[in-house]
Image (cartoon, rainbow, N blue to C red; front, side):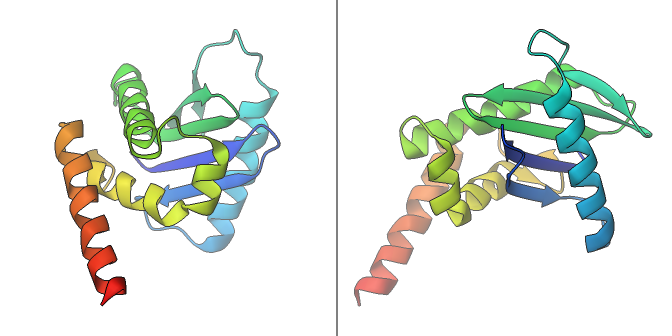
Length: 147
């Protein structure tokens, strides 16, 4: 995976994770272009599209779009599974995740993503293990701030 973007139906970027080195200017250009492209698509259209030399895989959950760019030879269905797995982790952690959870707890959303994916590849397939790692980090953070 080259990058993952989360954005709202209004086109507001809520989370971005880049696994390839790009300049800020290029990231902004890509983000603007992709958000417009995905939002312009009809709901019944396929969640895969060819864009530049990449494949874009996206899925809408409530008011958020989860959008990933993958290499031409990568499997789109596995990428959809990765997106779904991340959404399930967010749901379990936040208890039915919504856009506001991502906005106000973006550091947790990034932390969950980093526990799940490493360098654009699935690092941990067990949702239980990912949630345990997050729980441990939360306990560590609580003990740090309470002392």
